[in-house]
Amino acid sequence: MAMMNVPTTMRDFFFEDPHFQTNWGQFDRVKDAMFKESRDLWKEMDKDFRQARCMQGLMPPSGGQLVNTAENPLEKYEKGWMFPRRWMLPAIKSSDLLLAPEMELFRHGPPSDHDVIRVVENDSQLEVSLDTSHYKPEELKVTVRDNNAIVIEGAHEDKSEDGTRFVSRRFTRSYALPEGTKANVVSSDLSRDGVLVVKVTKGHVEPVPAVKNVEIKNVK
Image (cartoon, rainbow, N blue to C red; front, side, top):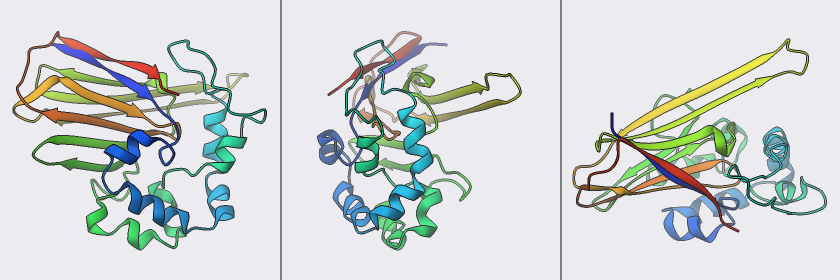
């Protein structure tokens, strides 16, 4: 099986990184909807998530330098705005706006599927956005296989110090590589709050090795 790993670029919080603001459709509408919410409500809903991400130490998986956000490692998470998660919507006043058809959020798969934020395809690109907040960057992998499929995988395992508890979660998502797509022009970007955006630029197919791994780079 031919496979090519796709590098993933580590970015800032979704709502704070210029890359997503420029390249992610409906960015401004989603951001405006979230900023109408109570800050206290938002912090309470996302408390566990923010702490879990901070426990990772914000260390790039490639062994790069530690990102020094503040003396208090939770400060940036407490002041930042997280991307909305599907499970939060019942408590969010603007959920009707976020679920409007034109927003294309959380409309793919059954209601129990909280991972898929949206899948958008047009004449120029295929874009897949996933909620991977329960996975560390190094636990995610994006590959192009056999020049006809994009496979996104995540695997997490955690064991308590005394060995009495073990948590394991994993997912695999596969999307057909659009006909005429350049297999070597597949990008993967991961926001600090766990939004993984994989984008495929449509065009002429070019042969690639059996597996192409996505390199994880730290952008700051």
